[in-house]
Length: 469
Image (cartoon, rainbow, N blue to C red; front, side, top):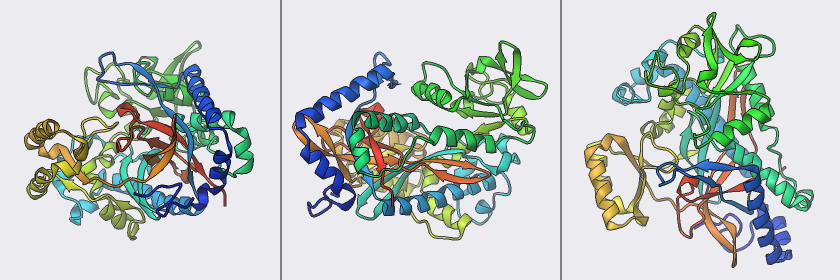
């Protein structure tokens, strides 16, 4: 198992040396006090998330660990090259799938995988978003297994969340430990809201004014990520709206104001496709805007991310990402995929059922750690129940080996202890190019030996430091 602070041979790795010297010189009791203060800071700020499926569907404080995850400039440069290549390929794939479908004609992806996929939107066929950008905001989940071994675990191309925690984590660390930032040269993440606003403005439709009007469409206060919606709107200086605040006026989407209805140019939507427009999609939706998709198709508004991008989130499509990257870029993928068995394939299903106790099994459209099985951590009863689910709907699942994820220390009452982590860098895409924030959201499994890092499943977060060159 690779520890990012101590490495494989128990010697402190170069990115951590200066920090380790500092933390070793501090009183453990003082560090624990600082950790308690950080928790109180989060509580006062209201940094919470909703947990669905619990008895009370309660709001919870997201756990935060004060020991940062540190990435060298060299490591970050490698990651950004791979992420940039992958995001470029995803956008090209989405354009192709909704236009000429050359990748299907070439036989690189099975037609059935698209045609029978619930995330594919036939209504998007022939629709070209402004600048041909489909995924304006991307969260690429990355895991590490060794010194130079990085794998993409998931591509979040619909409505990736967590960027507010990245920003608040850094703000908290700056507040708690200003002295360490004068010793260690860490790249800033604070420009993200400004960069997001600029990127969305660059993606505005042709009918927009010189200063495009941008709004964030939220499902409302009961959504698990509502804190993030309100936080980003405040940081960007954008409007936070719900579906009932909007209507179609003269072929544009307009929001209700005290002076009447004002046209919007770009909507950063945090509402799923199915609920976006009750006329074109789910007729019982109370969250969307009737007719917004017709306005979108006519070029009257930019929707970020574009409807139909969920096909690139699909975990069965994920298994073809090396082919997708090579098809659209002409290059081998820089970042590796995790080996994946598609349970829709009979031979793969047979293997998965035979090795269920060794594998991680996920729903193809799942997120947040819900609906998944971690075989090595499951009881015989849990394995038997999941076996029945696989047999009933094999096409709903993929399986992957249980990777030995890297660890980073967390602060416990007994001192530093290693815990497994992943990383979600955030990517902005516009007609002007691709921009990657130096850092991202490090999620950490707070339970010893646990591989599940999702906050909804008991995980926490860390500040992610990318060192300057």
